[in-house]
Length: 508
Image (cartoon, rainbow, N blue to C red; front, side, top):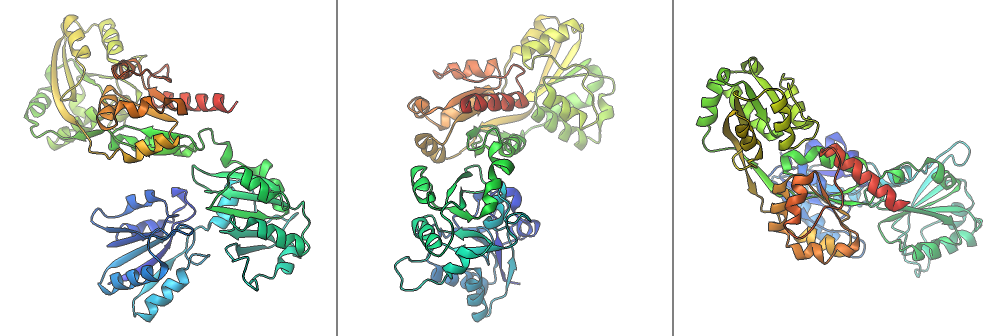
């Protein structure tokens, strides 16, 4: 049955979306979302869902509120399940009640799913508790969007100025001089601590603390604009002590992740947890093969191989899919020695019940060859399940060492059809600080999608190119660039640690 769900998307941090909201998004026919609702939430939607952006940015509405109401009513009457995704909480200065009334009047069913309001979350991330036994025992949420020229204010400024509440003003940055003036005129002391929090809980989070009389000038000097909250009260003095979020090492740093979408989730999650603004820009598609007969043949004669060498997590994944289809499991490799090119590949094997017999100290093909030579690979039969197109160093060097090498493709890579407009625009705005490359293919495909001149002309804006290892760096040099950052151990954790180290050096 049709229903409109008025969903609070929370203040911006994807982790603060409620479980119920996520579940509704996954079944909705239509999703209507606002400027303040994080687009990442749309990943929870069905692929065939109708996605409608209605704006509602301060002073710039893609669709006016009356038309949004009409849209919700029409979709409901068309028999659709509608998810109306609103920043924060629908009933806290979100006009959710007005939308609910319109739906009721039209005979449409609705349900409200509350969200974490920015009034609570943004100060908390900035280290400001709204209540504290020593400083405040009540809180007032106030709209700061009043017209300062209207004859009468809806606010009781005397009560606000002389009470002991913490005051939280929504949408008040443009009226900050008026708010400051009115509170002082009605009895609040000019040196009362005041904080501004902009884009609270997101990677663009920023805060400042001043006094009531100085905050308008300080906000203008630091360029604070909407969306920002104003917090007034003694609790603001705790900000320096309790401010945990702004200590994240990569907060505000724009990081482009070029890995295949299937592999990027872990890296994106780790970077986001460190505060980074992640640009997901997969340059590689990982695709199954049309013909797995050669792999099935190799699986049927696994007992004939001395070694099976896995060069990637994807190699393990696709090999295992066909192994299972053949009715086999880890026991099929019981008589083989197994090598993994690095710890991530070794972990993928371990998850499937195989402990790698060999993992090189340096995670490149050359080190695999050197290690296997020491283990006596000469004269032995080696199976390498890998991508259809890959570097030939490993099989060639093993063959030179006297091994009988058989390569069997288990997947293929392709160029994605990503739109480069967001990346190019963000480069121009100086919002990107790091571009990460985790393989030669990510480099080659990135520059097939983004012209090298876009990088060259923006390097003076502080962009740094990050390569996972020397092979990737060599490919990058072929495009006229060199890596600014490269870890010693050629791993994703190593890349992350180098990003943290570089960011900390810049801050110093």
